[in-house]
Length: 512
Image 1 (cartoon, helix red, strand yellow):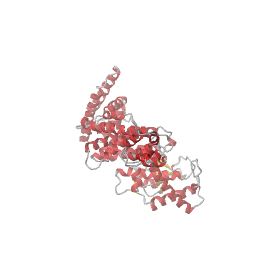
Image 2 (cartoon, helix red, strand yellow; image 1 turned 90 degrees about the vertical axis):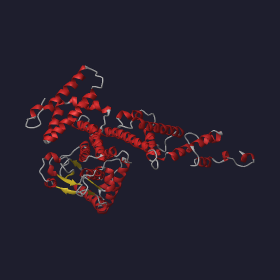
Image 3 (cartoon, one colour; image 1 turned 120 degrees about the vertical axis):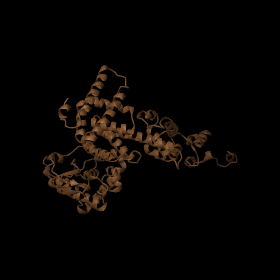
Image 4 (cartoon, one colour; image 1 turned 45 degrees about the vertical axis):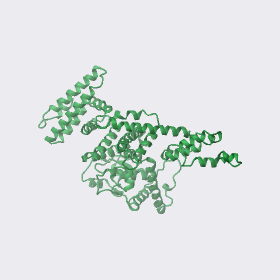
């Protein structure tokens, strides 16, 4: 103002672009911008809610959130800034409350009820949790501990929703790569894994394959795909050229290989780790191989071969049911093409024709999750228990009424001392729903165990069952039928557990 009175140029006399540049300086705070906008009309217009100044202020403070906005969106940046600021305050209040509420026990599912009912966008809440986790040094270790638990829970809930939406799509529209990414994301919710970045890496490999293909056959149909059309190469010789190029790039140039030295490492099952480490197990490498081949027009199909996942490539009439009309590709074995007899040599024994048939995307996911389940059972460490818990969640998201896995989940929770109220009735209902199936599952488990193991298993089931009955009786019975179901199930399982351990023919006892 003094400059203006002396005949010089004041701040409000500057061109609009220069004024915005000054107000976007990182030296100024949001409070400074608020005060400046209250001085006069000129500065208030420069600091308008949807303008560049508040957008820059938002970017400087929370740069990772800009990916949620499009350049063409007419965003009220001042409103977004306030919403994100308030979300941060609410997040810290909730994290601080966790220490007082759950210091001496596991956080139950209903412990997250405050988070699920928040009015702010979920990515605001997650961003604040990440800022807590990224605090420097050993400050606020308790906050970091609970922020990690909350973030783990939130991201897994979102991924489960995405998985269920994925499974609801028609089978022929499901992407094998997307399914593998969803499993990867659920088991590694704190890692920055997204389908876009994984797809970009696969596309980069596909481009390398095209370059190799171009040197061998410049007129190959895979080199000139038509926009908007699904590329399909029908000629077998052209398909062979594609597969040779894929093998050259994956196994010779990029040095991908099956991880024979550390086969049972869980990282071999996660697609983003396969791309980073360039090694994996048969099913993870097959998903990568199949995705690249399909992008180049070769319709390979997954084969749920026992002990060693394979892909099949049709040599005869399309859709043939004759297993000898196919070559079988071992992605774990550097893309080697096998005959039916060589597939049997691979696993060391004869198998029936049904094992050479094609499987659906859901069955591929089931096998991937099953591998993780088995890895989780191998050791008794915190990491393996977490892997077992995550893989059980994924399996039950696909097959929610699978009693065997519901009982395994109950046993795991019993072992870990976790009793999530939201799932208790779900488990009890599944047990009551299928008494014959429960009996069959337990019978099969008993047959595979030794005498002392059977006694331990029986005691475990009794403890689990007693807990489930106690929990189910906490609920208000809506009708006499519910009480009768609980009583019938309790009697059925009790009779089952009273049978002698050995020397009895159990088969007739499990047909009711």
